[in-house]
Image (tube, rainbow, N blue to C red; front, side):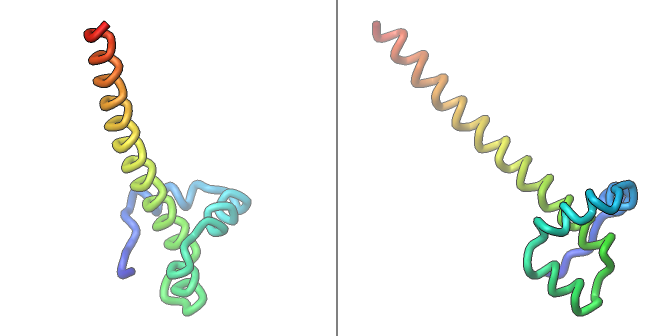
Length: 83
């Protein structure tokens, strides 16, 4: 995982208090934590990358849910027309 955090997420990471940073770090993937332990990245960079990954995952989940809801709505409308 050769990923560098964007400036936007670095700013978000800087604004977090210590407790919030710890919570984000607890959710960090093992590759990120190994990079932190090897001192290849800073704590702020790990937090920023993790926040960015979580936002990407959330956007992907929302897109999938929108597709599922559209399919369900289509099925529901079809069954109403059949009645």
